[in-house]
Amino acid sequence: MNELAPATTNPALGVTIFALGGLAGAVFYLPFKKVRNWAWESYWFIYAVFGLVIVPWILALTTSPNVFAVLKASPGNTLLYCFLCGAAWGVGGLTWGLMIRYLGVGLGLAIGCGLCAAAGTLVPPIIAGKIGSLYGTPSANVSLVGVFVSLLGIIFVGMAGMSKENELPEAEKKKAVAEYNFKRGITVAIFSGLMSSAMSFGLQGGATIEQLAQTTAPATSATWRGMPVLVVVLLGGFLVNGVWCLYLNARNKTTGDYLKAGAPIAGNFLFAGLAGAIWCSQFIAFKTGEPAMGKMAYIGWAVLMASAILFSTLLGIFLGEWRGTSSKTRSLLALGLVLLLGSTVLAAYSGKLSQKQAPALPAVETTAAL
Image 1: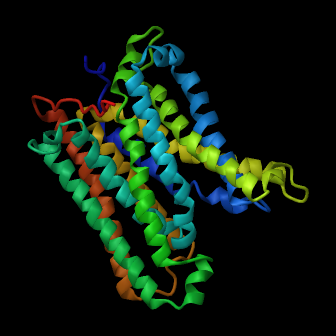
Image 2: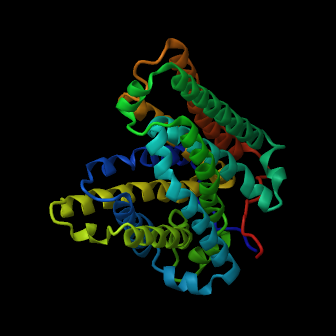
Image 3: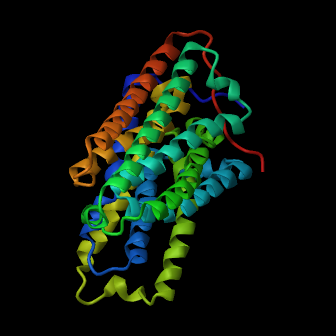
């Protein structure tokens, strides 16, 4: 397979875009707090419709004029792989809300995104049989160190969460997180984080689709070449989320929520849809930031997740989720945040090194043979 057409590399810009995506991933849940008198499955369905279908397709049609021709010409096994990865993410995504429900925004996203970051960064090159691309050159070695620094930061944030669990009385913990339950939450977080990493596999597994986007007239620009991949992956996620939510609507007799008297219908649609649009922004940032990273694009997932953890933990502090904890717990939390920030700096530095080294690393392709 031919390599993707080159884009102008700018690692600093790429890392900035990934960080903005992480910010979107950290705050997407906030609009849900404005939804009133709807069951979870009802507002999650509207979130899924907007975040997994409407927003990505509007963007794809706007930025990728050949999207339908590209998808028609793409190999069936690549499309299926990307779709199934999205579906696997969908299973993890269904429990993402439960994770936040039991652990809070700060701790929940820190643990879930941390596991997602580790698996999503390290597994795709292994699947592609290119584990050697993870080390052996200055830029690859620095990026690998950055991944482990990120994991260390996640461990310290998790330790802070366990320390918080032991320190605060139940009533105090539930002031910030009404249904706080560390044991139940950590179980959900492990499952959700690992399953959600399949999003990375799918988004990085469509190199053939991206090549077609740049070579099929009228061509899509290098910056937006990932949009046809994005819509396929998210469609798989929507299938799982949509079917499950509609099933719960029928089982729980909440189908009438969408026209429920006494509920702020317009506001609920607006805020649930806004949550979906913000959520989708993180993966739009991931795919548009990749071209700027050049051969080091595969580290983008780690930067995206580390940024989401950093911003979500800061948000948790702002929301009072760590109020009343000891200096020991706050020190663990602060150390974790510093390490996460350091991992992002290392990612940017590795991108800079990749521009100087010769020969460049081979492109990482993760399309699986089915």
